[in-house]
Amino acid sequence: MQTDYENKISRQEALKLACYYLQERIRNGSHLKIIFEHAVHIFNVAKIAEGIAKNSNGILNPDTAYSLGLLHDIGRIKDETVTKVPHGIEGFNYLAEHGYPDLAPICLTHGFISKDIQKSDYPTYRPKLFKQVKEYLSDLQYNDYDRVIQLADLFSRGKQIMSIHDRLEKNKSFYHIKKLSYEQQAYDLRDYINNKYGIDTEQLVQNMFKQPVGMYPTSELRNQPKLQPFKFYRFDGRFA
Image 1: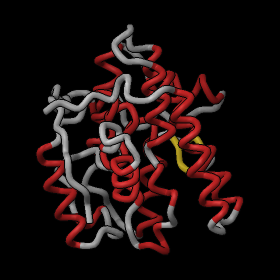
Image 2: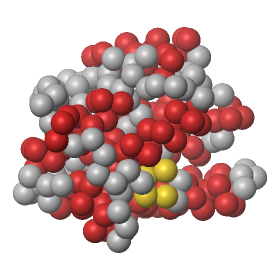
Image 3: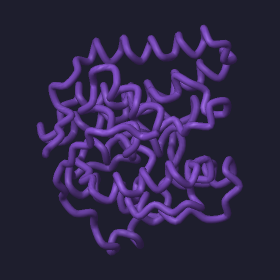
Image 4: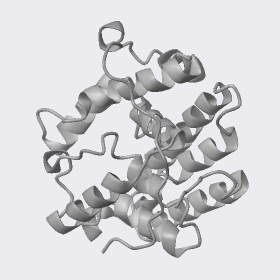
């Protein structure tokens, strides 16, 4: 079965959902500074995704890309440091149970650039959940909306806009990891989007936010194998 993100939610509806889950975190006692920085993050991701879609020669729908950017972290409606449930899982289940099953995969896919996931990269995942996600991803075929949100997310952390290199370094520092198994895939992802749509995403982000994002490994990585087209897969279950 095929899953298609397009025409599953309006831009306005996605905005309402995003505002709702941010307000829920505030009502549940989360620190306002944390919620403010997260709000900036999801709107930055949405803006970057929309910008890429606008430069896709009509292949990608800017409103769909923007909506997915707003919702990719909806799993943060709950504090995962308290629940011990990764926000990707929380978000997948939340959207699936609240009438948006076709959008639910974005909550997971944005966090897994490589489908060959390694447990060492995701220390917050309990073994059972990690196994379930790994099996789910092995059957899932990403589309370009998944990849655009992955890439947009790499350029943003908290309220900051940064290079892919710096984002990966922040991830390693936060999780106390020396090396991430998907570092090369992050640059391959950028090259895939750049080459397919004839754009320079780093320059695009720099122009959007009027600040340099750093041109980290470029030409020397362009001879790496490119990502391949993919099909869709629909998952009718729930992670538990």
